Length: 150
Image (cartoon, rainbow, N blue to C red):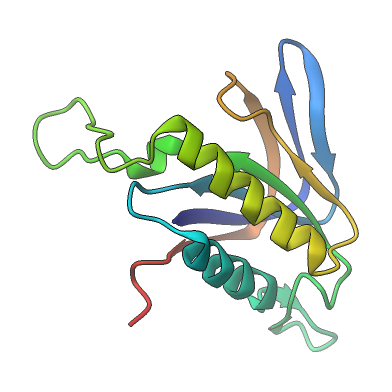
């Protein structure tokens, strides 16, 4: 699994002119599921993201996690994170998981984050065309890939 995590002061996702998810201070997570991913990848990613210390403490150092600041999550499915542009200029998405598997692991990841006590977890609509609006705070943007654990 791959995730692009952005620390935000606000974020929202809109589908067909309706806001389907909206948060204040927290993380906007774009989540891609790979063809070989399992629930273990989702567990790893959730654990890593929820412990990621990128919020400032009283000394101004990035030393606090999303839980420490009672932050919120907006999680949006993003299969294009598996776009392979090494050949030509049109990305190949053969390494992305098929829709049913991707949706299952996406929902597993969302439920895992909710179960870990995050006060507000919002989502987009899986497979829909979405408009994502964020205010990146910092800016802070982190890429995490469950295949790159070493």
